[in-house]
Image (cartoon, rainbow over all chains, first blue to last red; front, side, top):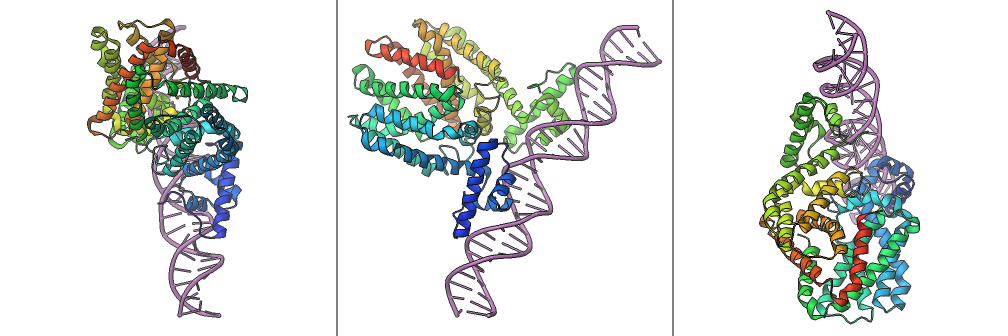
Length: 227
Length: 227
DNA sequence: GATGCAACTTGAACATGTTCAAGTTCACGT
DNA sequence: ACGTGAACTTGAACATGTTCAAGTTGCATC
């Protein structure tokens, strides 16, 4: 069965959009688990079976949600990507924008994380069905690096986007647990880690770190390609 | 409702043990999802309700499984912990022992990872119900460090066990995806990362890294305490 | 206009994790 | 012996994600 069906008619598009909108609203109101597929269908004004016609499972609604937030993220970072040239500032702004964009969904983000982290699910970050979105995010970070005025060695430039994608997932995991007001702790961690990373990149050419650098890059490659 | 009930009678202990053994066997034979609570109860020779008397949920059987593998792990590393003094070797052996110990369960390990990673569940690694086990594992890594002949700064010694616990979880996540024969890729990654970590620890006193060191330790502290 | 076909829709039926009120067992004090 | 109460056991009932065979709609082709 296909992951999710692209409607072929305007009526179908309406149904699909209504289902996703209902799901998003209910997730926010009641949380992920407490939202039943029946409630989603009811709110969308379609039958239970129709929901499964457009989304193969409840988890696939989550994948759509990720696509949705990615679009919001892209829109949010447009200006800074066009203007800012300093790598640290670009990174900081882009990653800050991730958590700011996701803030309205913080309450139920925790509940869906396991869905996405599940290595068995084809929806997991390394899996088949999320490949398109994953590549988009990695490309975004490639753009963050390329659009900066930082001069980095080729071997680092090759792996950095993937590393930053992993880093973003780590930040989101921290953010999920963050209960500080305004999620200030996460923002602080972002500021510190982005600055730290860029500093370490600057040190990568030091003789003492030369040996480690190749190994680290090899590891990133290993981890990224999964298994 | 309590997490899991400690039997007060011998009969109760038998029932509880039978349920866990049945669950473990069925998980291995059919995988996690395909194993129903009814099948577990049937194989254990008890009723469905009795299973829920001893384990509050299917996930709690997973927590018991983690306790079980932790005991296996402890038994496996006894000799090397008593003999070996080199930090790199101690680390490598201890982490290798983790994946070797878990190897018989590799097929269904992926399915239960999401259970444990779920930030909403009290069973998640940072959560309340897994605190006892988490502390045990962190203590183990404190012992790995303390029992070595490495001389490390106090601030590093304070955070290193927690960092190594996080590292172990990362290794397990990689291992879950690893489809190489004999899980050789994971073992290789372990060898490389342990050596790399110890090398970087040795460089922590270099002037260029002094500034980053404090920040990194602060970050580890932030991340570890969760939110 | 008639026909056919793909897209779309439906809700009953199913599987399974979980709850719960009711029943049973048994060690212990009297 | 008897009563008591905690520990243990039971399976029917429930909620909900998912499947599927059957029905409806609407458009393109003749």
